[in-house]
Image 1 (cartoon, rainbow, N blue to C red):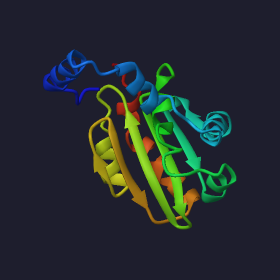
Image 2 (image 1 turned 60 degrees about the vertical axis):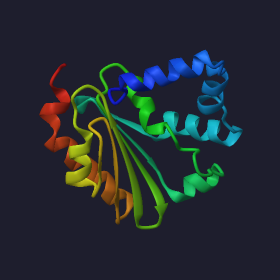
Image 3 (image 1 turned 135 degrees about the vertical axis):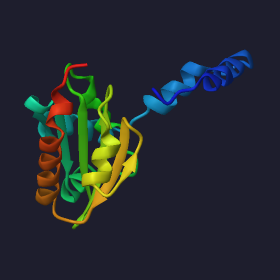
Length: 163
């Protein structure tokens, strides 16, 4: 990621010299999922991800009922917001998750020079880094989706400019 620094790679090199099993660590961090988490991710990608093609953006929404239906536990939705960025042309991804009725957790990710931290601050009471930000809204899911649409309309030029 753009936030990686040279010293991080030097630390990793030192750990490799000490004999750590990087593949085992990577597998335990990124490839250890429960069946319910896998089913939730499949459901989201198939049913819940909406493509806003003319904005090079995607939106994922999950309400509390859906989270309960899939027996989601803390961490099960981790990484969902990043997955749409694997699609060609997508520059901005938003994930709206209903933590409880009337409280929406917002995760934003972007690539290249699109400033999702500015979107987070302006529209979602949040902040973060240029390509990884978040926030929260106190409203219904429908109202949160309307805020997202307002945001991508405002940032349309930046979202559609080619890099």
